Image (cartoon, rainbow, N blue to C red; front, side, top):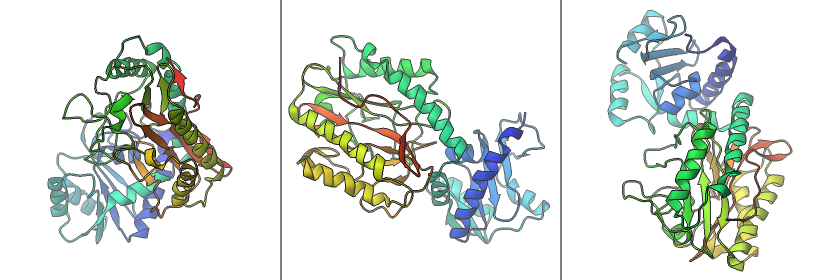
Length: 392
């Protein structure tokens, strides 16, 4: 079995070229990748080992496990200390400036790799890969489009998942079952050691106002202190909302989507806030084209919220966050982050999850989240599903 099938080599070459362009921006001679997400990005599959990408030589895939691949495609090693010997045997220059994933690998792993290259100056390769992965290839966009179709199909079944007297966790479990039966892989990759989530969040009523420790738009206290996020066994009550933010992840890429259901009539304030979210997204869909500053996306949303008099509830209530969206792809929280301080500029084929949300005390969370791809004519929605509040 080949590590990289012949029909996928061109795609990997495109990605390697993108990585090298980012390497040149920081004067990096080589990057050595060892994290799950970046190994997947640079090879199209996950294995235990490393990917070595020099600026001016062919990349090398060093595999520890599994040992089932055609050796013509890769190099097997037992431990990373063998890497330097192999580079010398192939007459590869030892890098003066070596990029390691300082944000993603453990401290002990970084020290071990540093000792293999004692004369190399370290550069943060995590930043290089985050920037390379911001703009998707055409193949990646198509994978996300496929993911979005599966994701949307499951959302069409959510109303039938609800049974009278249910709590939020029971509803989430039913949705998770639908996701798995549709083909979801059952894992949500997120960037950073301080970010954790299962297949998403179902947040009902007052739980929406429980702040969490993670950098998610909505908190929720969860069902155990070891994972304080999302559903907390709250009974779904009349007059309250249920925000469903369950993730895709059907093919190694992810789409992110949020919709709101309610049991019985809800307050005019909650409806107004939800409609404001839709208004924000429709405006951003039009103005967010290549060359548009990411910070202006946040400013556009903020002005609409201010005009509607909803600042008190925007992006939280007891605890508010200062972003309305984020990149999405292999991981849920990629670059760019849509904040008022962002220095990024939109580029074609960036994929973004935009989520202008509100928390209305004693009612719950409202708002819409869609995953978009940036095109010359604006944002194209990969998660098309009715955006108005729906009712059980």
